[in-house]
Image (tube, rainbow, N blue to C red):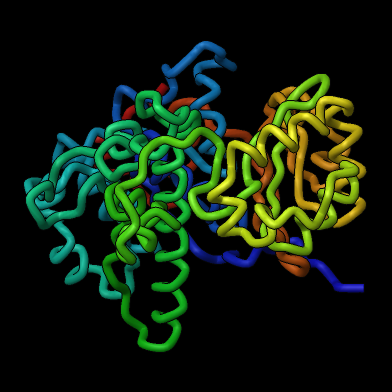
Length: 388
């Protein structure tokens, strides 16, 4: 049996998280879940996601709560020189500085990336931005839905023949947070060798563009410009939702062997030449759909999904979110965490010796100011601090 420890993989790493909204805070929460000490600095008006509700718990909307657990919370007015001095005092001890200030803001305050590099040569400076610093769009602010539109995600999402549709989750923000966390970990690993920090940037535009698989590789090889195709896969068939007696099932048939098993379970002929290969199945999609839905109409979605999975056919019933929360597998995987009155979604990153821990609910606004002031000796001119 593997021995676990109460210390997370990032125990001893201090992160100063001055980011707001989604991508940066999600990165900070990933680091915090795995043992880093994360001090979240909010502006005087608070992280705007505190107001992105209802629903609310205390002073914070669910949007904020889902991204900021395991963090200590203070508020600093960076528009004041005293506030910037507080940040610099905290960075003296920090391993990571995480921020998503608009390009040029830190430079305007005299603490841009080069100045921070000079003062704190071991610091990992992680920036989440919309478009990066350079290029025609460099320095512009970025927002998930706008990036989805700009990088082509909306152009391939939606019903066939219909208008482009925004994905129902802020996927660009989330994957940017993930990439920022990966970049931070890479930089920490390299610092262990060189002793030097570095600047890490995760831009929403870059991260959204990187999600366009397999559409970009298809385009590079001469395929037509993709358009919305509903739930159908551009390269694989049958890889789509299909109607059953009481709901929908998603079939994810990726090879000829799985297709043969699908036909066997549904009592369909497995030797129809029109469907002998994936390329032929793709060419004959309408007829294949008619055949499959004719057979699936005799079954409930949950029932036939279980039979198909048992037979080695990848598939799943299409469920609502409340059904997913109630699924026993969700509980078995430990994907819901409760800290007092706070309920959140657990980390999907599983380490067997140093697992994620859930130590602290998301902070109330400026809740840890006095404790941080005492610990870091900010009792001099701390007029840049904002107290509750």
